[in-house]
Image (tube, rainbow, N blue to C red; front, side, top):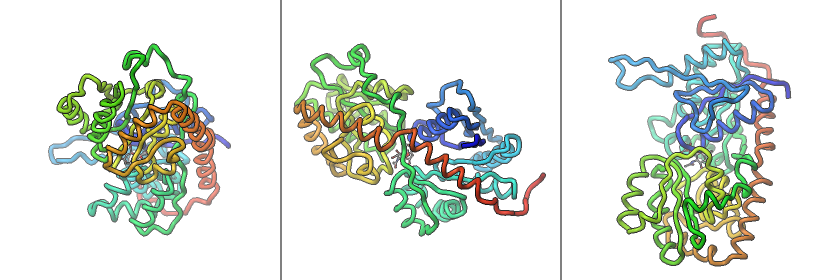
Length: 388
Ligand code: GMT
């Protein structure tokens, strides 16, 4: 495909939507496209230097009158400026709120010369925040007006159609993994031994520690598990539920067996050391962390919710339990960890499914195809409402 210029807008903090936006931007730059990231801080997984990638910070002017600094407006201004200075072909926003609204406003100002707007829906922008009465109507407008909308799972696409009465297409483009950055080949006794001894099992969790992740269920599952098996728990990530999780671990008397690592960036290396990954979320549009663990050859024990069954094949690449049933999660985990041949088969199947169904190579190509289709369409001639 002919190189194009893409503006990528994402939330930079710890979380799957920022990870997907970052990995996509890196892969697009490696394919020769010019990529401009736009946010209020550099995305956390974007290393300093990447050929073909520039980061643009959105500055929000503070003023005593503003109780809430108008980020959405400042982002719009940055997208207008960048569309003109860099001749953006595409603005691809990750997470509808507020990014899709800013992009559409920028498009209205830019008129006929505006880039095409692509919005990728990631999860709570639809299932939680987007359905809040104060956001519902504007989110619906944004989804209907964008030039293309993608969702990371069939489940999320269906939820978008039903919650917002959307009839226009919602393209399902799943999340993806880099099979080298997430690989069983990263297993290392030296690293693993920092967290567990030879005779111990190493169980882990990775998330942004929000209430939707049901962090207490991770701790309670491990509490039951460690009564039956010598084991340690690795908690990777940061968020509002981190301190309560530490408290719960202390309360249950297992603090000494739980390592809280905070927001790590090279998560592939950590995930590859695990024997099992836990994801007890209330809802999950996809479950990127589970896919990353699977790609490392780590079987997963997750909740049967949202898009997780599209990622995890129950009893083949992992085990699924009902939301809140941490007893099921603990029993499933113990049974699997005690059954070596089954564990090994599941580990292989997990890696195979991850690389066969969700390879970066193919999925990034799906985004490129979508961009190419949009750029072939004649841009709607709309009179500019702004300057130049
Ligand atoms: O929706 C969110 O809470 C934010 C987002 C994030 O930044 O972590 O998570 C969502 O996007 C990920 C990447 O597409 C998905 O893997 C997660 O399943 C999804 N989270 C939820 O649906 C709760």
